[in-house]
Amino acid sequence: MSFDVSELREVAQLLRATARAEIMPRFRRLEPGDIRTKSSPTDLVTAADEAAERLITQGLRRLFPGCLVVGEEAAAADATLLDQLAGADLAFTVDPVDGTANFAAGLPLFGVMAAALIRGEVVGAVIHDPVVDELSLALAGQGAWRETPDGDRSPLHVAAPAPTAQMTGSASWRYMRPEMRARVLHGLPQLASSWDHRCAAHEYRMLAGGFSHLAVFNRLMPWDHLPGWLLHQEAGGFSAQFDGTPYRPGQVKGGLVCAPDEASYAALIELLGLR
Image (cartoon, rainbow, N blue to C red; front, side):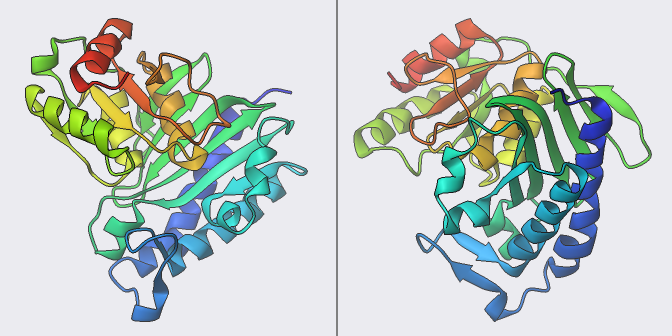
């Protein structure tokens, strides 16, 4: 089985159409009953998340009969879906609205993401920014690129390596153990700049586009990271878990550091005390 650029474009157009139909009409128009919490007060789901995931799931099953679809909301209801990712001939992860807290607050910093997997290997990625209607795409072994609404296409490349004092990027430390969080927060001021957009979609887009050097994550749900991980890799970046092992699609625990190259990764691990 293979997954080619024409199939990737079908997925991209499905995400774009869904955003137009279910997400953007609700942006800044959510009613109080359209927002609720899940695992914590900061873990939100909206009517847009649920409606968009339903439409994307239906579309993927129509385009790729027999495929497994693991959406964020579906997996919250049925955790066994995650266990099926590694063995499925063709599977998709779906994050219908990445950055839900921003979306619910009316901040235009959210995205729609999907990754394609063949027997546990990530082969395609789409990150759609519905606010500006721009796509970031990647195919395993074939590079990463951005596409504007008018079809203009340009390749994506990570930033050039730099000393840690000149690096900028994102660090999400909310889910770290207290002792690790303390070490990371001690090290972050030694970078040129750091932030947390509360939106992996845009943090990965910045990385792959060369607008930042690093990203640090500590909760690895596949719908949050598989699309961006492939995008960053195909744009020339290096990433690994905190202990140096490669990131694998079935992993949900542990942390991930993305950097321009392996030497930069090692320097960040040392600076932030992540090992």
